[in-house]
Image (cartoon, rainbow, N blue to C red; front, top):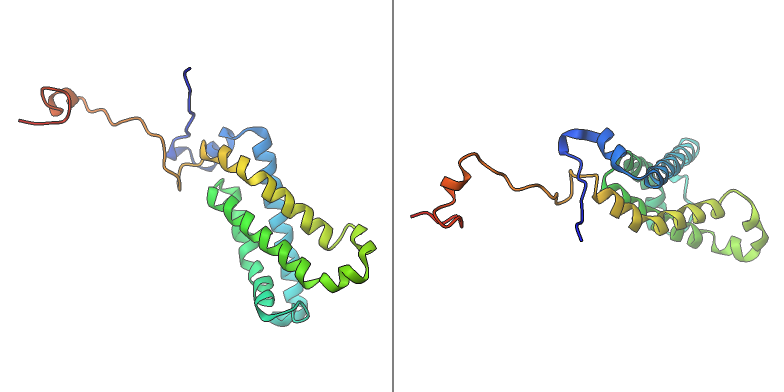
Length: 178
């Protein structure tokens, strides 16, 4: 069986990486970026309203620091994703896993007191659904991106062939010189 691996040359840039992806992978990456840009806007609005203490009621200090740090992590994930970098998908997975866990932890008493409020289309449900989407699709996206994003992955490159390769490789063709 012959397996053909398509690798976009490094010089092809972002456009080439996007073109090399299947449509579903492109659609998922666009959804990732949209979700993280929406998160950036939400956290920016929170910080604009309440300053650095906007998340003071969200539990212990490490959670508050994490929610403030999302103002940097969310756009970073979006940029890396739009540049079709595997690191962006990994960062997105880590950020959403922590974000979902932190939100559920911070809102646990509210969820217990008002479980029907989870039926609203704002708050925990969309964060949870987006987090599940990111975690569920990340492995397939990483596989798709590995075939197209070459900047931070080992790349399958054809061996360098010089015009004088036969002469340079020695009489046995094994690289040994006399």
